[in-house]
Amino acid sequence: MHPSPPGPLDDCLRDWENLQQDFQSIQEAHRLYRLKLEELTKLQNNCTSSIGRQKKQLQELGLVLRKLGPVPTPWARGAKEAVQELENQIKERQGLFFDMEAYLPKKNGLYLSLVLGNVNVTLLSKQAKFAYKDEYEKFKLYLTIILILISFTCRFLLNSRVTDAAFNFLLVWYYCTLTIRESILINNGSRIKGWWVFHHYVSTFLSGVMLTWPDGLMYQKFRNQFLSFSMYQSFVQFLQYYYQSGCLYRLRALGERHTMDLTVEGFQSWMWRGLTFLLPFLFFGHFWQLFNALTLFNLARDPQCKEWQVLMCGFPFLLLFLGNFFTTLRVVHQKFHSQWHRSKKE
Image (tube, rainbow, N blue to C red; front, top):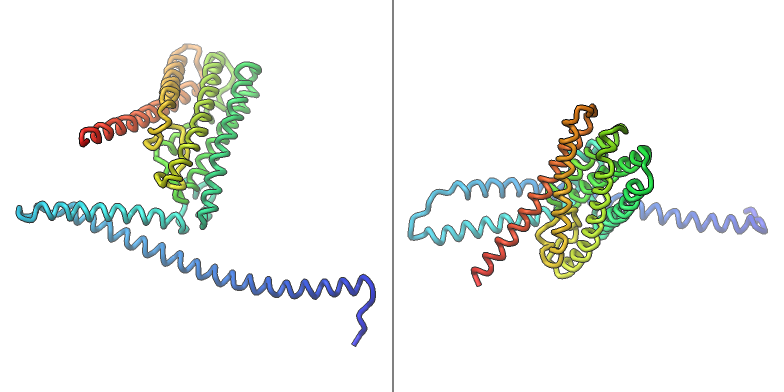
């Protein structure tokens, strides 16, 4: 047996032995982790297939209920109530499945598949989901402040196509990033309404066309109006994110909203209490979008107009106005209608 070397080498050997013991425990922990991961994958697959099977059966049951013929008069009322109760339970069950699927891996939609491929973007814990949602909200808030500052600079301090292009490129990147993050949040259980997702795709297209619009007479005629609109829109979005975040926090604490609900660039039913003061700002912005569309259509009729970007910007502005205005109007109408029915019952 060789005597252990004296001095620093002896300390190194002793440290190595300690590291070896730690490494063995790490190997054992990693082995257990791999086993648990395999068990988790099997459980996920079992849950996904079971939920899919029962959802299909619920859909078939719902079709049978809708096809039921008239029931004989003595039992008509009881049968009608039983059918209504069953339909309510089916709807409730589908909502529970939606919450369950938020914690299970799922195939990405077309957009995420094109951008990210077949990568699993489902976050497995509530903490991770909420942290990603919170980071998304902060991203919107910070970028909105940056957009206000840059649009103000371009509008009042700098008149350069280069800085305008940088601003439009930032808009393209911002809206593209929003669409990707929103798709990931939808995969993780966020219930974002269809139009408030789709209008970001329209805004991405609009910003991309603005980016390619060359400097010229038509561009200069519309430039100041567009930058003023962008400044106002960013200001209203800042107000929305700031006040909606506080409102959502309060409603979640009361159990009236889902933990994955998001702020939106519009008006939804849950905002009725406390955020109706935003409606005039929103409607003014919607009509400014219509004004932008009409201005661009008028410019397109000018004999000096040669750029295809003029019409290609006009149509998205018109689409944004129609979608934003009628979606907001529908929410307001539904709220007034429900309040009228409630007061009528009382």
